[in-house]
Length: 144
Image 1: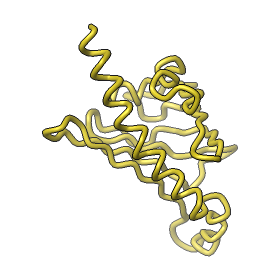
Image 2 (image 1 turned 90 degrees about the horizontal axis):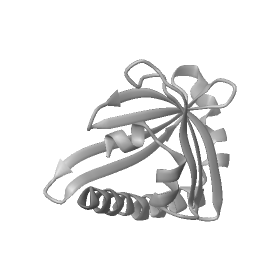
Image 3 (image 1 turned 30 degrees about the vertical axis):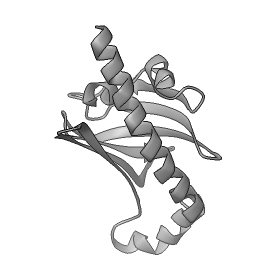
C-alpha cells in the first residue's frame, strides 16, 4: 500500500474509485521520496478537492505526510498512517490545518475551507476509500 501511495499514477488512482478519484500523480521526485511533489484531484461528497502536496515525511510501510502547497507551502498536512493488523493494513487518515506560534490567530480562517460539512464528507470519503483500496490491491495481487 505504501508504494502505491508514494508513487501514484492516474490510471491506478482512477481504478481505485472510478468517477471519484480523478488524478493523483507525481510532478517531481525528491531524494528517498522526501520532497516528492504530487497532484491530486478528487471528489469528496459534493466538494471537488484539488491539491499540490509535498512529501515531508515518508516512513516506508508506516507513514506518509503531505504538506499542501499553493505558491508556498501552507500549514495544512495530510497524514496517512499505516499499521499491519490481522485483517491486513489499517489506515488512519488525518488532516491537520493551522499555524504554530503567533500565526495561530489566523487559524480560524481555515474553518472557511475545512467546515464541519467538509469534515463530515471527508470522514465518509475515507471510510469508503481505504477498504476499496485494500480490495483492489488484493485482487491485483491474486491475479499476479
